[in-house]
Length: 139
Image (cartoon, rainbow, N blue to C red; front, side):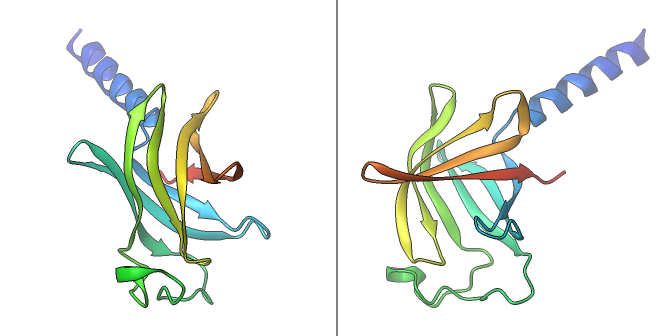
């Protein structure tokens, strides 16, 4: 009976983790499909943030030469590019995401893909226009 309860607790914890936004996600290039980076999504002070943990392309720039303000020319690894997101209505929203390659901030919404808790739908908005990416959970 104790083994059954332990297995049930472990299974439930694994299911909750699989449905969480938190953790490490693999991004990919919109045009080539090539893996680009690992982004760690975490909570701090009641808001959700994301930072670059690892660059995956050999020829990738290591610093943000197009970034505005304090991020200009800073190392990409460790850079916080997802800021002030809040969980509301089944998604992360009301925050901003930085595209380091373009050096632009976009308003952002994120949600887990229906039926696939290991795919994060990331949508950046600039006015009425948007771009959608699909990030994959790193296990």
